Image 1 (cartoon, one colour):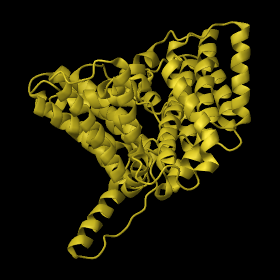
Image 2 (tube, helix red, strand yellow):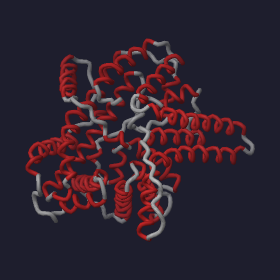
Image 3 (cartoon, rainbow, N blue to C red):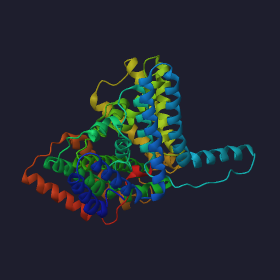
Image 4 (cartoon, helix red, strand yellow):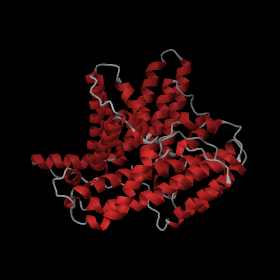
Length: 469
């Protein structure tokens, strides 16, 4: 089931919200939330519900025994390390098998073909379990946080399961840690307030409008340009790159807003996931604003354990490259994602060195332009179907393929309008979190008009882009 579908918006969500607040607080309410979340997840593909439950059992058990071994003291340190290692390894094994097996097999086959050795390895096509990247990272964060003592373990497996299966974020994030909502789920004093519905609807409608009225309107034009990557010119190359840069932002930030809104309706507060990233003034600032829950995860569980920026500049550069390489691979089993991650690691490293020697520009406007152009170039690899396709788009952007390119006249006018409007939006307007919804009739009418327009645009729901990751 998609968040941007009639079934979810007009049937599932209203029924779940009403029943959630009607059912008595405590375990009955949590059990209902788990059942609703598993139904939501299972309607996408029931075959992978057992995998979700298996990883849940592994991580909850690991957290339970990590907490017990800490209380035991004595020689428990070694056992705790082994237990944490086992929990992380099992999570990564599930993720690696279902998401990356084909990628590594294909890569090995390519090496064997180059050296002329051996027969092709047996192919195994697996359907990617939806949301596995998100709930795997969530489970790893839980085990590590309990090991570090930064959170208390879940009171029960019911509390843990209610968190890890939460339907607002299970399909495409954001990456919610137990520390974000665990205490909220364990609270006994959650009570219904109309303000929760009002605020939740505001976030839901804003996110829905971003998806339906902006991202999905741009998608056909962006897809056409990237599908004809070999025939793009200067203008059409930049149209493709800028179009996707804005489409991805409105699509994923739209999903994040909808997830936040749905969570608020059931009394939960999710962390912010976007903070006007295209207003960033350097690569580090960009990743403090873009997909904030992922960047925070990579910082806390990868970059800092590697040594962070505590050592020499060379070691900092190494840690940045490793972190963003793995961050790129997390997004998908393709060399385009690997290169995208390395490119962002390089951006970060160049900024670290330039900042150390006082070589960064002094003007905020120039820093913002350079950062935005760097992000736009990186998104080409993120969107392209292959490294060759990315190279074609970049060559067109560099003016190596002429000015207009074939087919640009069919998509230019409307896409250009979306690009100009989108650039003004992301640079001049406040983001959703910077707006305080007010319970006034004129705002309610405006929100209703936006919702109606978005529903009218919902002729055929299309998955959010991050569902594929």
